[in-house]
Image (cartoon, rainbow, N blue to C red; front, top):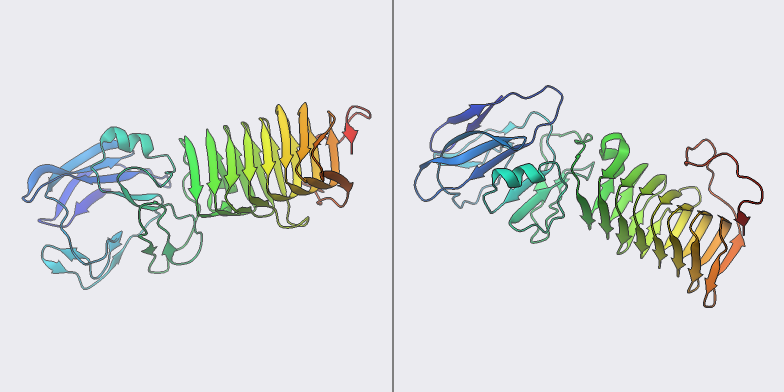
Length: 340
């Protein structure tokens, strides 16, 4: 594979090997002035520089910025009158107004960005999974893009170094992830976003879901750290429920949930929470406060602490988990747990 740059001259800055059916991360940097200079233009493949070439600075123009070639793309000699569309798969596109170093490129190439990184001017994570609009995910401005020529949506690469996955004002379609699993080796933060299933949200660290986020049905949330859910909707009905497992301190606050809550950390707290379905509690501290209600069934290894007025547990219907792998043994020893 080679990279061709049209500008002052047609330039192939180098060739690199690309493995068939595998994703590569390609980065281009430009650090030049008013006149052409050597090595102003550099290319990186999977975080390692593979070539360089002549270049100057970026010049202002009124044309579109395109991946592939738009018919009105601006070059030094004028506009092209025909289009050449990109033939391949593309994901996680970032535009910066700073010259990224090799170490910066290497450290972020497998990482989902939060959108507020310094120098980030456009960020297209392609999580829409439908339509012809590429939403700009950076927080400084709004530079949404247009997807042309009948592009087909498909699952993207599995990003192995997602140190912190942060989603703000997003629509997250889990089907667009490999295996329908949004996974992080550390924390996941979801704010004012909608998550569509079916699929999994899995974090080795903490999970925070807040600010009017909506988690659709048939979604499994697995948190190895602390779980904090505030001002959120979890599931939409008993027929469209969620399963949430946490092994750290867990707080559900000012939220509504349909599904199964499993807690195995130090504490489980429901604060002004309306839960419809089941709770399985292994946490030694289990508290309901401020008008929290559970309608369905609560099975707990420890007693429930009611604080304040208005909190309640009442019998009710449960989601249908028949045939689903929800991570539970098919039986419990009689007398070892309390059912409320």
